[in-house]
Length: 172
Image 1 (cartoon, rainbow, N blue to C red):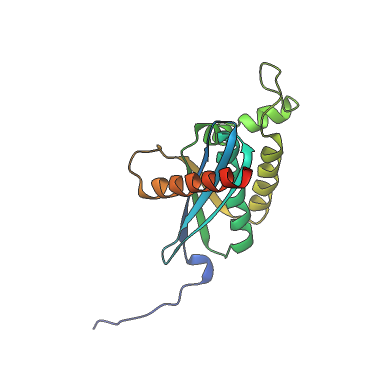
Image 2: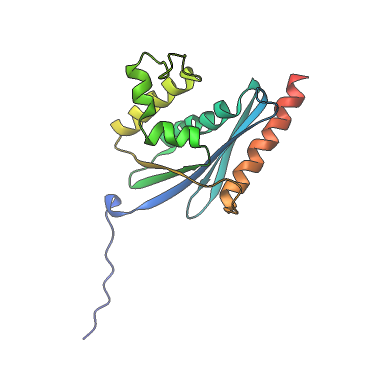
């Protein structure tokens, strides 16, 4: 005899993964810049974006990650896991190779004694990452090769570049 049983999953057993792609762009570096993040869920895709009139490419790459963290904290539901992808070696290496911790221990100075750039965003990143950890939100950060045909990386690159144009118009 075959029994067809349906079992209701407990909320904590449900594993939903959100894949987030972030990117930043800048014209004239420094100059007008834009950032974007795309949230790819099983049932939907949404995006966030913004710009700064005078900025750098690295700042926009990091700003995209910070803003993605804010959105995660605002919208998180139990059982949700996040995988964030960036094509920025600056961002991914600073996070995954613990450069941030070294900078903090060195008084926010590089090994050459220079001030760390984008300190305000790195401090915000650390604050938001702390909140993610407090809430036990599962998040991994990985490097994706830029301009290599990854659909979502190309899409978020387009968003960031569109925001550069907005920043350029706004700055005139």
